[in-house]
Length: 358
Image (cartoon, rainbow, N blue to C red):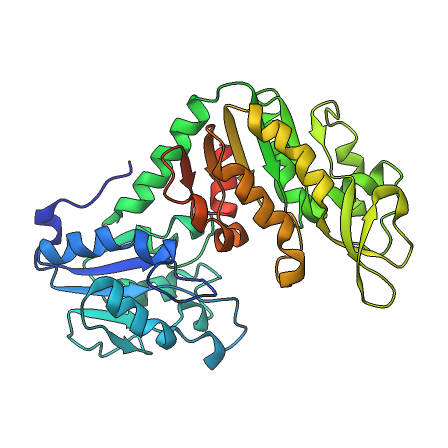
């Protein structure tokens, strides 16, 4: 059962708090920093003896200063309005009220879900609270194994995430629209199969669209595709699937060019959807009563290929539909819609998909 600890379960206890601040931009307005505030305030108000914060940053293969959580201290102290001490060991912990441990993935046992490593974490505290919904689908020591060793609870935002997702699943009104982007279609295929009968249309952009266009016989040039999954895609209901038909590409000279689907050259690399496709998508967004979106429309790591994703956000901004937005990479673009009453922005990417297909 998902529940917060009661005040009496917190008072004078050392709390091991798992959060997720794995973000590119460290600022107090970031949704992940904002969403953990209520739990921290709750712990301080109810006189926790100590709060030991654990999180990860990136996917380091070893202890790399580039991925150190020390850089997050100034922002965390502003968000929590409290002094925080940074510590990079698991023994002789300082007695300060709030301690931030170093990137938990610097320890090998974390990603192996190693019970011996989890025991070292458990020795630090009396209770454990998971306030990291976005990593809740991972079998890691600070998420999974630790719950076998300490009384375990959930934070305000974690519980809110689950509640919102469950409400969304139960209250899908038609016309319903699913919008999927990103790179790995095999991660999204179970979702398409699960909700195929519940939605009227499925817009597919990003590199996901490349694989479908490739399967349909279109030339996609040098664009990213996943040929291994094509046999599984043949069973999809293509009457519901909406694909982009114009794109922004990099040509053989590494120059950005606009192409319609029938103009793609063998040396082209598709990296974003075009304006015509976006205008076409708008018709489906406008008439939908329920919308789910997960994944960018283009190669957002490069600013010149962000306009499809930004354009989609602008369409959702004026929509009156009930909207659930998946996290992950998409979180970098959701600021204009985060505070709309009809929109819930989940911090989870893979975790959200896992919860939706349950």
